[in-house]
Image (cartoon, rainbow, N blue to C red; front, side, top):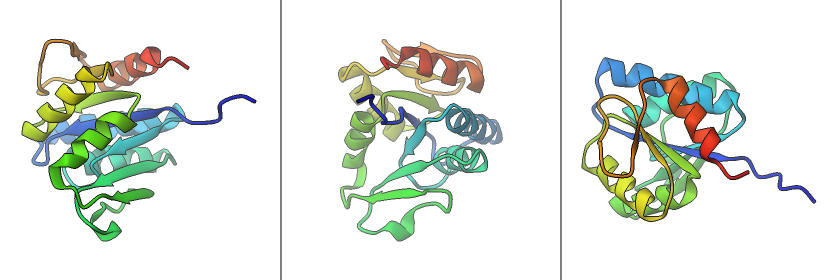
Length: 155
């Protein structure tokens, strides 16, 4: 029986992004959904909400791995809220859940998600303004980030 599971692409990034970061994140979310994958993110605001919005516009599913104990903290575009009550420790769940990750800008949380993902052997594609670390792949546009993420999947 063929595997019917959809690929899961993580979007990680700044909670206080620039206008350009918001634009890139929304475009990434849209591209992920139009290619049939599920978007996973932290489920809150900033880059997470912009990417979620892009996926929602394209009719895709958005899994939000939430830091708190209930679903109500999820942004309005999250279709699959997962409350963890784990705070920042939820970053480990995001890294484990995603098949590949795309970083859009970011701060310490994004750095931790990137490092964990790399340690797990997951590819991390970084758009301008994102954390550059050994092992990440720098990309110049949302379309190239999503294209490379899909190419990295071992389907």
